[in-house]
Image (tube, rainbow, N blue to C red; front, side, top):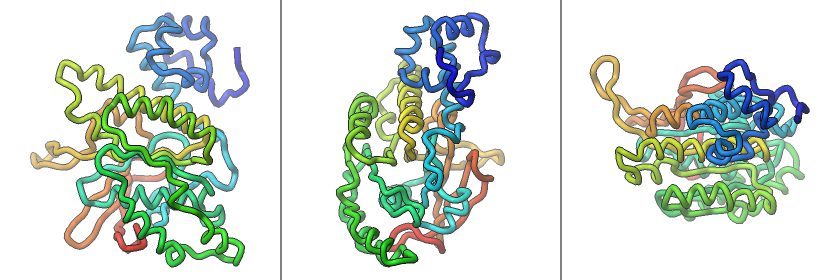
Length: 323
């Protein structure tokens, strides 16, 4: 039995006696040991029901997402978004461990935000970057190569360093080559990418950021009403493995979500993130983008790092910037 880290210990008291016995018998008392498997693989190993396995995985994922000791790099736990106001909104920037979801209607700036993060992760450490690459998974449109090149050409105007050494490092980064791009069309292809391709890439390339733009596209229209339970299982499988990769490799994970109309308390309609509670319960931080005729806004819906509030921003040639 591995008891090397009390921070990873499961609280067995939250489970029924049969589940407790199965976990003890199998030696699965640490969240890190559980998240080495997919939900289906783990269920077979410990002979639990689907519901019991789900509860175990949710508990393990929550521990992993909140465990601030997971592969820390002491001075580099928070990644800048490249926008001062949004960094302040998030409590300093984007935090490792867990899934950050960014949702919003079409044209509000979700992809612009993701492109900018794919660049900020490459920045030198003094600029709150990570000196690392990104994996960008496209499920809707082709990767916007011309836009990313425009943002790259403006980096020297957007970011300022305090000394010549840092400035030289800023200019020498090959930003385009440090973004690994994949185009995915189906849920099965996405699962294969996450379970097989990404782990191999992480062994051979200095990647610290995974972006899925968007998680919604592959799940819309692929399931009939009778297949909704399978849809939920596929969502959990993807989310749990992303949590696992985040913990094991010290990654930032960003998933773009779309929005759908819902009835508000006053009888009107409001936009809410798609994919329902089965996905919402697996997200660590939920951000919502919106736009009006005069401005765009970023809002924190929930986060373990900051309170719920919102700030305005604008999209320029240089990227996402404060108003």
